Image (tube, rainbow, N blue to C red; front, side):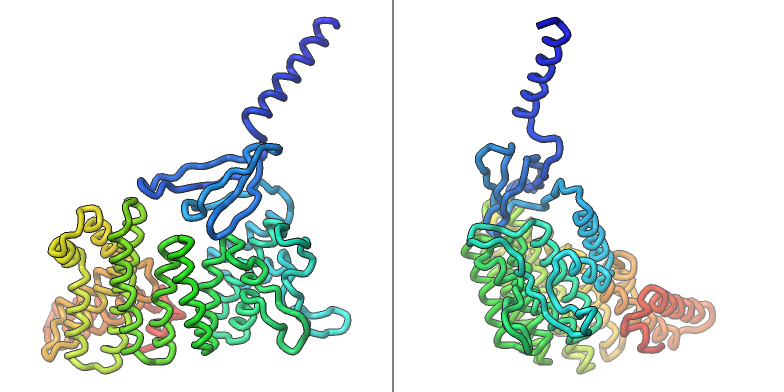
Length: 453
């Protein structure tokens, strides 16, 4: 063998060895989080082979044995698929993230293949099962893109139906989520929760939550309650991310709220608060402590939100006083004092205080305090305006609360203007007009924008 030939084969051997030990050029990526530190890292692998609500399996190389990471630690998964379908899927999910729910659902349905369709020749509307064409056998999975597109189609349909208050779209989302008999037809829908039964997908918990919420909007309250209860029990047993334990717990409150039973909603949401605190007390990993602390305050915020609606409805000073008392008890320093008095460890106290600073919690809190000042027997307009301004400046990313704050800021400024004269009156009038202009330009579709003023 001459020298050039020997060098060629030597180079080939080196290249093969590099592939063997360093892995493939085109690879899937799994981003995982350390549940103690909260730090993330990325696992680069040849292929993700399966995803369930408890574990994600992957192969480092084509012929290597499967490895496992708990789904609880998985932040995201990036597939190396470069196909046109994968590009279309990525574009559709990006549309979903931008709030283009209808467009996203249409594209995702084209990839997943299921749902209501119209025969172009006959004009007949028929339902195509999402499981049609799936591989046979219990351990055989559909392609990843079929699983992902199915879930995100159901999610996009639900969000579209919820925002548009369209019952038919919500019903279509429900049929995509639950494996039930096709309405007026034969067979089943191949819904996500049946297609990937017993937690057979990483998206299974969120699909359960969406099913419960869809059932609430369809006024099927008993079925919704059963779904939320199942989600909470599964979250404790598996275990799942703290969010799913929380979503299961607050389901009862959301059902009462949908029925117009605001007292029942307060009771339902309050029930989640001590449970989150107990779970926080049992947790030893700091990142997980932070999650329980956040959902503790999220539950308090839900109570505050309902109390806020009830106070607005009743327009009674006592209701606003109760609201302010509840909100002030949930402010960071009040939470810190209470936690210290109960002898909680510093790590748990820090998690609760950090949760109380969550923007969604703070936005509801400041709006509630502002309304309490505005509805005292002798309104405190300046104090109310300071509270509403805090929301308009710091928490503009919370659209519902931001719109509410702008509306009431204008109302408080007009109230202050009536008691003022000269330049001060002009200042308050200008503030009121500016708030209404911002409301109408930034939240044109919000009910607060059409309330007048």
